[in-house]
Structures are given as C-alpha cells and as structure tokens.
Image (cartoon, rainbow, N blue to C red; front, side, top):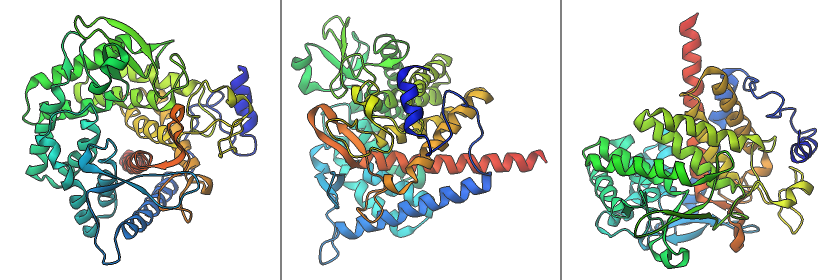
Length: 434
C-alpha cells in the first residue's frame, strides 16, 4: 500500500470498512430487495427535488421560459443559475435529460410535458453549423432520451441532422473530431478533448438509425486514434490531444481543466470510461471493451474508499485531506461528485460485458458510490433543489468549484435508473434459477 492509499484508509476509518484494495469483489451491501427499495427512495428524492426546481423556474404567473436551463448552484447559493440554451450553452441538454429520466422512473405525464417543452428549444441545432463537439452532449441527453421513450419521429430527424453536422468537424488526416474550432490557434493545431468520446454516441446511433455508415466510421476512427494518442501511464487520459491540422500527426497531450498535463483529472478519466463502454455497446469490438476496462482500472486503483474522487487524483492536498473534508480551502482538495456519477453509470453498464469476477468489482464500486451520495452531506435536500452537492467544474479557472452542476444530477439519475434495472434483472434471474 502506497502513502496515498494509506492516507485514504485512515481518512475513512469509522465511515466504511470497504476498501478497493483489500476486498474489491465483496457483494453489494444488503439484499436485492433492500437495494431496490433504497434506489426507489433515491429516485423519489430526485423527483421531489425536480419538482422544486420546476416551481422555482416559474414566474409569479406560473410561466416558465423554456429557453433558460439550470446550469449550477455555486457554493453558498441556494437557487439555480440559468443559461440560455439558444446560445449553444454546452450544458443545455442536461436538464431536459433529467426530466426524461424522471419521466422514465415515474411515468408522470406532467413531467413528460415539461421534458418536451425543455427539449424543443434545442431543435435549432439541427439547422445550425457546428459550433463545437458539444453538439452531442446537447442532443443525446435531450432528443435521444426523448426518442427512446416516445418514438417521436421529429426527434429522430433532429438527431440525424445533428449527427451530420457533428461529422463536419472530423479531420480525416488527424482521425478525430475537432473539439474547439475557436481554440485552434490557442493550441497550435487540431485539438481533441477527452469529453468528445461521449459525443460519438450520436454518430453511432445515427448510423444505426438511417444515417450514413460513414458516421460509424468517423466515430470508430475517433475512438481508435484517441486510444492510440490520448493516454499515458497505463490508461490515464490527457484532457487535450493536439494534432497537426494539415498532416494530422500527434503533437502533444496537455490539460485544460486538470492539475497538470500528466495528472489524472477525474472527470476526464470518467469520460474515457463511459465513452469506451458506449463504443463497445454499439460495435461489439473487443478492443473497446478491453480498453474500457483498462481506463476503469486506472481510475479505481487510487479511488478514495467512499467511491467519490478528488477533482484530480494528483492534487498534493489529498495527503492532508480527509474524506469528511467537503469544503475546499487552500489546504483541502475538492471532490467531484459529477465524475463519480459518470463512472458509476458506466460501471453498471460495463459489468454486463465482462467476466463475473470483474463485474462484481464494478458493481460493488458503483453501489458504494451511490451509497455515499445517499448521505445527507452530499445532497442538496433542504439547502437547494439540486440532487447533489460537491462537484468541481473548472478548478484551474476557479469556476464551479464545490458546486451543484446539472451534469452531475443527470448522470446521477441515469446511474440510479441503471442500478435499479440491473437489480431487478438480477432478482428475476435468481427467481428463474430456483
């Protein structure tokens, strides 16, 4: 056990006896029925918080401006800060996505109506040139969830159009999609960020649903090139990979939101885990499954024992930060609930694709993470209408540090729904075996 692992073990003494190092395959806590009941309670909590948000978004006449979407609640604040979705705000799809997931969980037709109304203002993206790679984040969360749950043909057409638009950012010489067209000069070449792995789902889905097969080829090229150049030190992701815009050769890996170029920025690593798991879902290519496990295991190796990472695994303040220190300061390293939620959701899916022993490990970590986020100190609850507290957005810029952020809530409710489905399937399987 290295020094950091030892410090983690000390930090969580009295909180949980679980450590990844000593017992990674221990079964999830409680019986299946107990876990389902706990997940039902979690989803009810989310539904209650979501109704609070909707009430706060309405003016004195009960009218809601559906072009405004919740983005964050900063430390010490109690209400959502809103952003205009018609200005290509990259987080604009997460709140509609939360509504779609809540509708899936509750079958509440009033929530369905709100999901439709918050989704519709994003339809302009189908007729708009690509601003950056975040087009996938915007419509996967909103229109793809909407199409999945309603079969609305208009949603499908938006998705297909947006996939074609996203493909215009592909550089065949580099083999990847350009992430930030407005920052090419800043980076001295064709820049691709790890976040972009999530957007590949739009291309894969479109290729499977009436779009050109070239969209699949673009997505696979991006995933393969990223696999080859976007990682260092046994599966740890750079945030940014820079390629020559003309001939496409790899120039360097660097960071934008992490601590340093070669540290492990938690959310960047979470995008990699989620992204390669998704790639395997659409392609069944073994190399993506193997790589998803590699990047997941790199993340799990030094994960704090409560399942929620520090914002960057190499922040030197970790050595003097206990897991009960949830208020960042010059001597306290911030946590990132958003990365925890992304990984928990991904691990639940990844568990379906791997051998039983590894599946048990991944499910145990996901279960532990959701148990931690169930604790009062991690929840918005009475203090604010967000599901969760303690996420970190852009630490180097001092932006959204120790905040509630819409994408944390999105991946949290997604993880809860996936966990509940998995638990129900497990219960059905056990019944069938009797």
